[in-house]
Length: 283
Image (cartoon, rainbow, N blue to C red; front, side):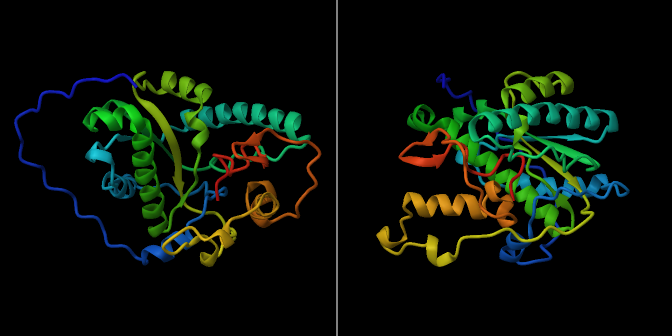
C-alpha cells in the first residue's frame, strides 16, 4: 500500500442528527442462529425504499478501524440491470465449475442463482483510501486487513438487520473477483479507486432454509491457553470439511471419496485448496 500523508483536518462541523433505528425484534444470538443465506426469493414482493434504508442504517453503525467507515452502498432496483448481473454471475460460475472438474474431477459449485428473483441488489463498496486514517505502522503492516475487517462488520450487520425484519439475504462475494468487479464497475459507473467488496440480494423468502451445522461450543473455546486436546489433526479436519461445509452441501449429502488431490493449504498437506464455503454459497 502506498503511504499517503493524512489530509489537512477541516474545520469541525456540527453533526447531523442521526435517524433512530427501530429496536431489534429478536435477541442478537437468536438472530445469528436464525440467519440463513436464502436462495429462494419471493418474486412477487418488493422491498419498500424505507425498509432498505433501515437495514443499511445498521451497517452504517458498524465498527471500523480508526472509525474510517470505508463502506458505501449501491442499491440496484432496475430489473434489466439485475438480469444482467445474474447473467454475469452465471459466466463466472461456469469457470468455477470447470476448475473444480479439473482439480477434483467433480462439480461442487451449483449453477443455481439464488438471488435471481431478489427485487433489490445491494453492492457493498469499499473506499480503501480511508486507510490514511490509520497509524503509519498499521498502514504498512495490515492496512488492507483493517479495511477488510471493517467491511465485514458492516456487511454482517446489514444481513442481521434484514433478518430481524423478516427479510431474506444472500452472501454473493463473487462480485469482488477481478472479472465481475471490472464489468460491474463499467456498468454502474463505480470509480476505479472504489472496490466492490460484496453484494447483498435483499427480498422476502419464498421458503425456509434448514439450519446448517455448527461446531459445538466446547470444540472451539479455549481457556487461558490453547488446549491441545481441541487441535484437529488432518483426518479430523478432512472429516469436518466433507460433512459440514459446502463440500457436503452443508451436511445434506454424504461424504464422497475425492478422486484427486487438490492443492494443499498452507501447513496442512491434506486440506483441499479453497475448501472453505464458496463465497457465493455461504450458509
